[in-house]
Amino acid sequence: METTVLNPTQLHLLQMFSRNYDENILKEIKEILFRYHCQKMEEEMDKWCKENDMTTEKFDEMTKEIHFRTPYK
Image (cartoon, rainbow, N blue to C red; front, side, top):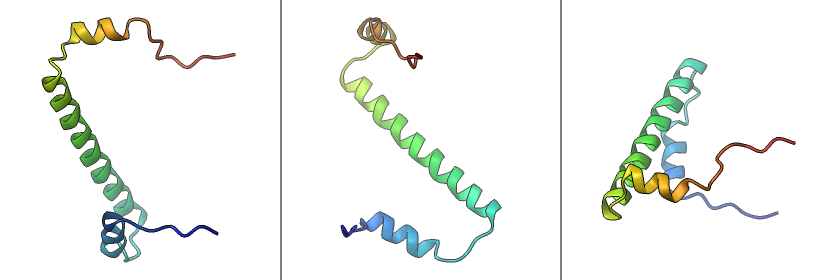
């Protein structure tokens, strides 16, 4: 069996949430973490777009041949 090593963030979260919370609190915590993660991703994307002088027009041109829909059989 392979051993999994937790990173410092995982360890901190485990310690922080070691209490047994009810479902409502768990739902709130998930929502907060999700929003935080989305915010950070958006900031990184904005930074990348600025660094690469990305515009909506450039993005549309780059992706015009890409199909984002799931193929159904």
